[in-house]
Length: 114
Image 1 (cartoon, helix red, strand yellow):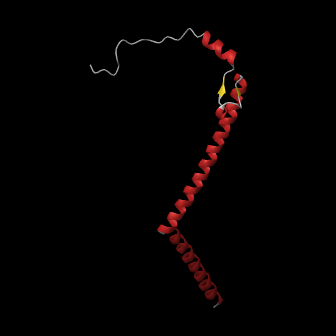
Image 2: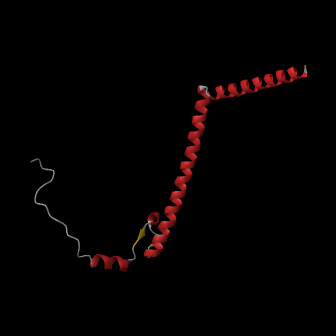
Image 3: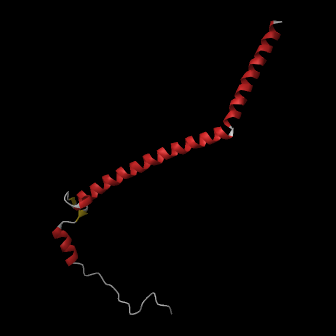
């Protein structure tokens, strides 16, 4: 008699557990639940993308500072938006020694119909 009661109780408990599990899964598949899950994943992806963009921006700023230091470019606080420029003598020297520039001249208008 106790055996039958034990197995009956075990079967009933397994049935309740399985029914609860199936109902939970069915609720997860309702359109409202799927929409909420998609919205949560989109927000999470947006946060990850924002963090990535901030990391890239910080890396770019750091690398730009390293390159400016290596090239001797210094920021002038009197210039608008802290625009960087080459120092005067180095810039003039580079322009004066540039003999490799060759600009071809064209005798016709490229926009002309032929």
